[in-house]
Image (cartoon, rainbow, N blue to C red; front, side):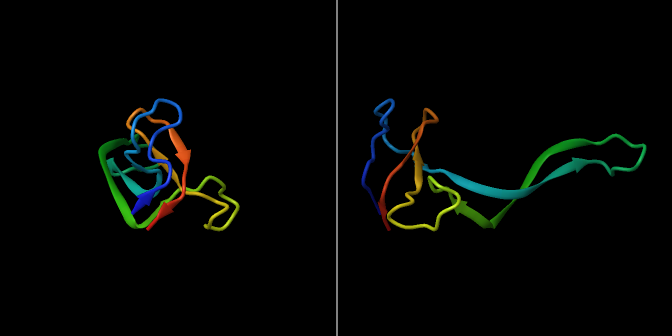
Length: 84
């Protein structure tokens, strides 16, 4: 793939990857009940089939006017065209 703007406009670092949205199930430690407090176990099952790249506008279809977001290792993100 070719990233049209591979450098972060804020800090100049290279793009590290795309920004993604994931769903999953954060498991409980123990069995919850009406009077039983429960904590998280520390394990999350990721539902990989639901993974999607985030685009700059959520309310628009993917395409040349709605670019995907990439990010650098410093946590900055920016829209850029990507040739897959």
